[in-house]
Length: 252
Image (tube, rainbow, N blue to C red; front, top):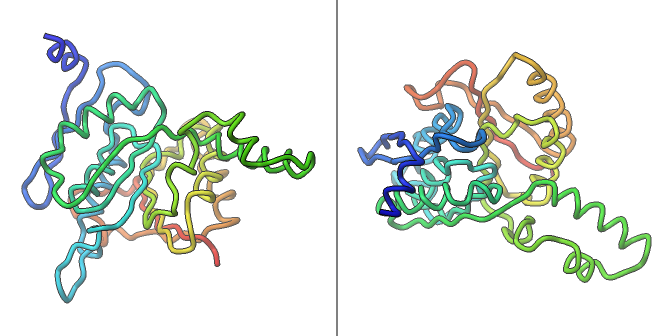
Protein backbone atom coordinates (compact mmCIF):
# COMPACT_ATOMS: atom_id res chain seq x y z
CA UNK A 1 0.00 0.00 0.00
CA UNK A 2 2.86 2.37 0.84
CA UNK A 3 4.50 1.73 -2.53
CA UNK A 4 1.26 2.70 -4.30
CA UNK A 5 1.10 5.94 -2.31
CA UNK A 6 4.69 6.76 -3.27
CA UNK A 7 4.09 5.95 -6.94
CA UNK A 8 1.09 8.27 -6.99
CA UNK A 9 3.50 11.20 -6.63
CA UNK A 10 5.19 10.36 -9.93
CA UNK A 11 4.55 10.23 -13.64
CA UNK A 12 6.97 8.42 -15.95
CA UNK A 13 8.81 9.51 -19.07
CA UNK A 14 10.42 6.80 -21.17
CA UNK A 15 13.65 7.40 -23.09
CA UNK A 16 14.73 4.73 -25.55
CA UNK A 17 18.42 3.98 -25.84
CA UNK A 18 20.12 3.06 -29.11
CA UNK A 19 20.28 -0.59 -28.02
CA UNK A 20 16.50 -0.71 -27.62
CA UNK A 21 16.48 -0.64 -23.81
CA UNK A 22 14.28 2.00 -22.21
CA UNK A 23 15.11 4.33 -19.33
CA UNK A 24 12.01 4.90 -17.22
CA UNK A 25 12.32 8.27 -15.53
CA UNK A 26 10.01 9.14 -12.68
CA UNK A 27 9.02 12.79 -12.46
CA UNK A 28 7.15 14.59 -9.69
CA UNK A 29 3.72 16.11 -10.20
CA UNK A 30 4.69 18.82 -7.71
CA UNK A 31 8.10 20.28 -6.94
CA UNK A 32 10.90 22.58 -8.07
CA UNK A 33 12.61 22.66 -11.49
CA UNK A 34 14.68 19.56 -10.73
CA UNK A 35 11.65 17.29 -10.45
CA UNK A 36 11.07 16.83 -14.19
CA UNK A 37 13.14 15.76 -17.19
CA UNK A 38 14.17 18.83 -19.17
CA UNK A 39 14.86 18.80 -22.90
CA UNK A 40 18.55 19.67 -22.42
CA UNK A 41 18.97 16.61 -20.20
CA UNK A 42 17.58 14.34 -22.93
CA UNK A 43 19.78 15.96 -25.58
CA UNK A 44 22.84 15.42 -23.39
CA UNK A 45 21.87 11.86 -22.45
CA UNK A 46 21.46 10.88 -26.10
CA UNK A 47 24.71 12.65 -27.02
CA UNK A 48 26.55 10.24 -24.72
CA UNK A 49 25.52 7.42 -27.08
CA UNK A 50 26.90 9.05 -30.24
CA UNK A 51 29.77 7.57 -32.26
CA UNK A 52 32.49 9.92 -30.96
CA UNK A 53 32.34 8.06 -27.64
CA UNK A 54 33.23 4.77 -29.33
CA UNK A 55 36.72 3.66 -30.31
CA UNK A 56 36.62 3.52 -34.14
CA UNK A 57 38.98 0.55 -34.53
CA UNK A 58 37.41 -1.70 -31.88
CA UNK A 59 33.90 -0.32 -31.44
CA UNK A 60 34.48 -0.28 -27.68
CA UNK A 61 32.35 2.15 -25.73
CA UNK A 62 34.67 4.78 -24.22
CA UNK A 63 32.42 5.31 -21.17
CA UNK A 64 33.31 1.89 -19.77
CA UNK A 65 35.21 2.29 -16.51
CA UNK A 66 35.22 6.10 -16.63
CA UNK A 67 34.43 8.03 -13.47
CA UNK A 68 31.62 10.55 -13.88
CA UNK A 69 30.04 13.18 -11.65
CA UNK A 70 26.77 14.80 -12.69
CA UNK A 71 26.02 18.23 -11.22
CA UNK A 72 22.44 19.40 -10.69
CA UNK A 73 21.26 15.94 -11.67
CA UNK A 74 17.54 16.47 -10.97
CA UNK A 75 15.90 13.23 -12.09
CA UNK A 76 19.31 11.70 -12.85
CA UNK A 77 18.63 10.83 -16.49
CA UNK A 78 22.06 11.92 -17.77
CA UNK A 79 23.96 10.06 -15.07
CA UNK A 80 21.80 6.99 -15.53
CA UNK A 81 22.53 6.96 -19.25
CA UNK A 82 26.26 7.11 -18.51
CA UNK A 83 25.94 4.27 -15.97
CA UNK A 84 24.13 2.05 -18.48
CA UNK A 85 27.05 2.68 -20.85
CA UNK A 86 29.50 1.35 -18.27
CA UNK A 87 30.61 4.47 -16.38
CA UNK A 88 31.07 4.69 -12.60
CA UNK A 89 28.70 7.54 -11.82
CA UNK A 90 27.86 9.79 -8.89
CA UNK A 91 24.78 11.96 -9.43
CA UNK A 92 24.57 15.03 -7.20
CA UNK A 93 21.90 17.52 -6.21
CA UNK A 94 20.29 19.06 -3.14
CA UNK A 95 18.69 17.09 -0.29
CA UNK A 96 15.13 17.52 -1.51
CA UNK A 97 15.93 15.68 -4.77
CA UNK A 98 17.63 12.66 -3.20
CA UNK A 99 14.37 10.70 -2.90
CA UNK A 100 13.62 11.17 -6.60
CA UNK A 101 17.19 10.30 -7.58
CA UNK A 102 17.06 7.13 -5.48
CA UNK A 103 13.70 6.15 -6.99
CA UNK A 104 15.05 6.51 -10.53
CA UNK A 105 18.25 4.64 -9.72
CA UNK A 106 16.20 1.77 -8.31
CA UNK A 107 13.79 1.83 -11.27
CA UNK A 108 16.60 1.58 -13.84
CA UNK A 109 19.06 -0.63 -11.97
CA UNK A 110 18.39 -3.67 -14.23
CA UNK A 111 19.84 -1.73 -17.19
CA UNK A 112 23.17 -1.13 -15.42
CA UNK A 113 25.57 -4.01 -16.08
CA UNK A 114 29.26 -3.07 -15.85
CA UNK A 115 28.66 0.48 -14.64
CA UNK A 116 27.48 1.79 -11.29
CA UNK A 117 25.59 4.77 -9.93
CA UNK A 118 25.00 6.39 -6.55
CA UNK A 119 23.53 9.70 -5.38
CA UNK A 120 25.08 12.30 -3.09
CA UNK A 121 24.14 15.70 -1.73
CA UNK A 122 26.27 18.51 -3.15
CA UNK A 123 25.73 22.18 -2.40
CA UNK A 124 27.58 24.49 -4.76
CA UNK A 125 27.78 27.33 -2.25
CA UNK A 126 30.08 25.16 -0.13
CA UNK A 127 32.76 25.74 -2.78
CA UNK A 128 32.65 29.45 -1.95
CA UNK A 129 32.67 28.56 1.76
CA UNK A 130 35.94 26.70 1.18
CA UNK A 131 37.50 29.81 -0.37
CA UNK A 132 36.35 31.96 2.54
CA UNK A 133 37.70 29.48 5.08
CA UNK A 134 41.11 29.39 3.42
CA UNK A 135 41.25 33.17 3.73
CA UNK A 136 40.30 33.00 7.42
CA UNK A 137 42.88 30.28 8.04
CA UNK A 138 45.58 32.35 6.35
CA UNK A 139 44.75 35.47 8.33
CA UNK A 140 44.31 33.82 11.72
CA UNK A 141 46.95 31.07 11.32
CA UNK A 142 44.56 28.33 12.42
CA UNK A 143 44.23 24.75 11.23
CA UNK A 144 42.31 24.54 7.92
CA UNK A 145 41.31 20.89 8.45
CA UNK A 146 39.98 21.66 11.93
CA UNK A 147 38.07 24.69 10.63
CA UNK A 148 36.32 22.59 7.98
CA UNK A 149 35.54 19.87 10.51
CA UNK A 150 33.91 22.38 12.87
CA UNK A 151 31.98 24.48 10.38
CA UNK A 152 31.39 22.57 7.13
CA UNK A 153 28.21 20.47 6.78
CA UNK A 154 29.16 16.81 6.32
CA UNK A 155 28.91 15.23 2.90
CA UNK A 156 28.01 18.40 1.03
CA UNK A 157 31.31 19.53 -0.51
CA UNK A 158 33.46 18.38 -3.41
CA UNK A 159 35.93 16.57 -1.14
CA UNK A 160 33.43 13.69 -1.07
CA UNK A 161 33.77 13.39 -4.87
CA UNK A 162 37.56 13.41 -5.25
CA UNK A 163 39.87 12.32 -6.83
CA UNK A 164 39.04 14.33 -9.93
CA UNK A 165 36.60 12.42 -12.18
CA UNK A 166 37.22 11.73 -15.84
CA UNK A 167 34.00 13.54 -16.72
CA UNK A 168 31.68 16.13 -15.21
CA UNK A 169 28.22 16.27 -16.80
CA UNK A 170 25.70 19.08 -16.37
CA UNK A 171 22.40 19.82 -18.12
CA UNK A 172 20.47 23.08 -17.73
CA UNK A 173 22.46 24.22 -14.70
CA UNK A 174 22.85 27.79 -16.04
CA UNK A 175 19.52 28.92 -14.65
CA UNK A 176 19.55 30.81 -11.36
CA UNK A 177 21.57 34.03 -11.14
CA UNK A 178 22.62 33.39 -7.54
CA UNK A 179 24.02 29.95 -8.41
CA UNK A 180 26.46 31.04 -11.14
CA UNK A 181 29.49 31.90 -8.99
CA UNK A 182 29.10 28.81 -6.76
CA UNK A 183 28.72 26.59 -9.85
CA UNK A 184 31.90 27.89 -11.48
CA UNK A 185 33.83 27.56 -8.22
CA UNK A 186 32.54 23.99 -7.86
CA UNK A 187 33.80 23.19 -11.37
CA UNK A 188 37.21 24.63 -10.48
CA UNK A 189 37.49 22.54 -7.32
CA UNK A 190 36.10 19.32 -8.80
CA UNK A 191 37.93 19.24 -12.13
CA UNK A 192 41.53 18.26 -12.73
CA UNK A 193 43.74 18.91 -15.78
CA UNK A 194 42.44 15.74 -17.47
CA UNK A 195 38.76 16.19 -16.56
CA UNK A 196 36.35 16.76 -19.44
CA UNK A 197 33.26 18.80 -18.61
CA UNK A 198 30.27 18.37 -20.89
CA UNK A 199 27.67 21.08 -20.44
CA UNK A 200 24.31 21.16 -22.19
CA UNK A 201 21.93 24.08 -21.80
CA UNK A 202 18.88 25.55 -23.44
CA UNK A 203 19.38 29.14 -24.55
CA UNK A 204 16.57 31.28 -23.15
CA UNK A 205 15.93 34.84 -24.26
CA UNK A 206 13.33 36.00 -21.74
CA UNK A 207 13.86 37.84 -18.45
CA UNK A 208 17.28 37.68 -16.80
CA UNK A 209 18.36 34.53 -18.65
CA UNK A 210 20.64 36.24 -21.22
CA UNK A 211 22.47 38.08 -18.42
CA UNK A 212 22.79 34.87 -16.38
CA UNK A 213 24.35 33.08 -19.38
CA UNK A 214 26.68 36.02 -20.08
CA UNK A 215 27.87 36.08 -16.47
CA UNK A 216 28.41 32.31 -16.41
CA UNK A 217 30.65 32.31 -19.47
CA UNK A 218 32.48 35.42 -18.30
CA UNK A 219 33.46 33.64 -15.08
CA UNK A 220 34.02 30.27 -16.73
CA UNK A 221 36.43 31.53 -19.38
CA UNK A 222 38.80 32.89 -16.75
CA UNK A 223 39.90 29.32 -15.98
CA UNK A 224 38.42 27.10 -18.71
CA UNK A 225 38.31 26.74 -22.49
CA UNK A 226 35.02 25.95 -24.25
CA UNK A 227 34.31 24.16 -27.51
CA UNK A 228 30.80 24.11 -28.98
CA UNK A 229 29.71 20.76 -30.42
CA UNK A 230 28.06 21.15 -33.84
CA UNK A 231 24.65 19.63 -34.44
CA UNK A 232 26.01 17.02 -36.87
CA UNK A 233 27.94 15.43 -33.99
CA UNK A 234 24.86 15.26 -31.78
CA UNK A 235 22.07 12.70 -31.86
CA UNK A 236 20.26 13.26 -35.19
CA UNK A 237 16.81 13.08 -33.58
CA UNK A 238 17.42 14.57 -30.15
CA UNK A 239 18.94 17.97 -30.89
CA UNK A 240 17.68 21.53 -31.23
CA UNK A 241 19.06 24.90 -32.42
CA UNK A 242 18.21 26.34 -28.98
CA UNK A 243 20.05 23.63 -27.03
CA UNK A 244 23.83 23.83 -26.99
CA UNK A 245 26.45 21.25 -25.99
CA UNK A 246 29.89 22.42 -24.88
CA UNK A 247 33.10 20.55 -24.12
CA UNK A 248 34.90 22.44 -21.35
CA UNK A 249 38.47 21.90 -20.16
CA UNK A 250 40.69 23.57 -17.58
CA UNK A 251 43.31 25.93 -19.00
CA UNK A 252 46.84 24.57 -18.62
